[in-house]
Structure formats: C-alpha cells, structure tokens
Amino acid sequence: MYAIAIIRYRRPLDEVLKVVDEHRAYLKRLLDQGLLLASGPFDPRHGGGLLLRVPDESVAATLDQIRDNDPFVQKGVAQYELLPWAPVLGKEELDKVFSRTP
Image (cartoon, rainbow, N blue to C red; front, side):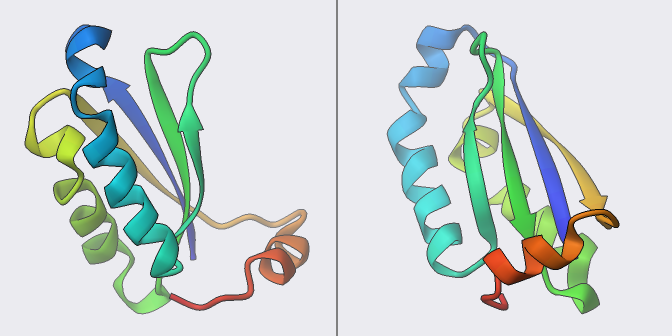
C-alpha cells in the first residue's frame, strides 16, 4: 500500500528550521527501511510531503508510528495528514520503480 503524508508547519519557519536536521535524519532512516520513497518541502515553504510505501497488513499502525516518531511532531513544530493511497493508473510503474518491500 502506498500513502501520502502532508506535513503542515504549526510554528514559524525559523522554529521549524531548528529541527530540520533531526527531521531529515529521521527521514533517511525511513528511506533505508524502504518505507519512504520520496520527500521534500512545498514551495512556498509552509510544509512538505512524503510518498510512502507501507505493509498492507499494518497500514494504520505503520503510518501512526511514522508520524509519532518524527522530530517535527515530537517537538510540536508540524502536524501530519496521513492519506493511504491506492493508485490505479501508473501503479505498475510505481511498483517497478519502488520494488523494495518494507
């Protein structure tokens, strides 16, 4: 199952930037685990987005864990909107590109 996480900043950007290095280190760990496929800030910079691939048998629990362990959330500078996503058109191509299973 794929998912999209929309991250919205809850604090001014200068406060968010103090946590960016921790947040990116966390995202790197998710990438290494095969859970994170892509990430980046929005333009203008009021938040960011994540493209995730999570195990079908534990979608909700995995997404909750991803959100709850993010330093952005732990330090109260951002909030997540988690959207499980079942792509139809292009799913085969996504599966080919992201063939690693979490």
